[in-house]
Image 1 (cartoon, rainbow, N blue to C red):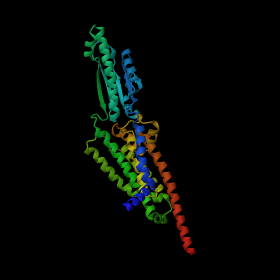
Image 2: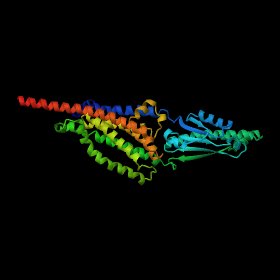
Image 3: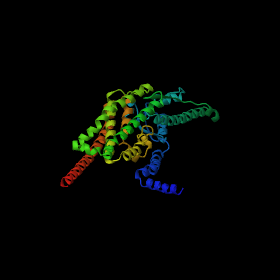
Length: 395
């Protein structure tokens, strides 16, 4: 028993001397707890952007618009007299819904013709669409009851009888960009992309760190002192293998009947950029941290919350701005934003120019840092080799 206690003390000593283990064991729960607490602290989605098309321009429609503006879950970004190209704008501006109040709305309400309000929902993001739908429905049903009850009371009907039967207008919800509301269509692409990013991160985190550990890096530096040469040497095998992995991922879409248009050139460009950006970040960690275990552990800690922070499932409007801004520089955030525009909205390269620009920026920064740091380590390794040779020669 005494020996066990002694060994137990040694174990505690070894645990508390391992900085990476301590960071994961204590830091990850605390860090994730605080991070996700900030992400979800709003508890409900607010200020979802909607557009109102007021074709009637009457006091009644003005009252409806005021009610929408007073709803904390909705943000009326624009009130228009005509629709124009509003449905083409919806994908680029990320409107959650478009509400159309038809011509003659007030007149038809007064004449009890039960006019129809059309609500076009952006179902590419089910969370936003459902939240917007609930808020819009609450506003309209409250007004619907109010209009009808007031009309019946003016006709001399008992207030209780008036409340028992009302419907001044009808509401037609029209689902766009994922009309079935299929949750698999909404969730699976994001999950698969996040998994691929993490796989690439972790695979690339091993390429140089392993060489540092087993001494192979010194052998490589004897063949070339160019950092570009070594980066290409490490990247080519993965560039040849990753297309097969992406092909397998893409075949899951028809298999699970996901209604998304992914077999096109813009999606290919986006996928290539996500792959390269993830590779460069993974390789940068591999060069900066000369330990396979530490490099992979650190990337796991960083990449695990990436999917949640991407805004794919939880709206960025509900995430604190400082966290949302940081998340913009995670490759999968830009990929999923572009994915939605291409797969659900039918967008082209111009529609994802913002996402392409950010991914290129991530690649440029990671690649530059990787080249500079690797060149420093190559020069240091070759210098050490020369010192050893010189010492041996003198002996």
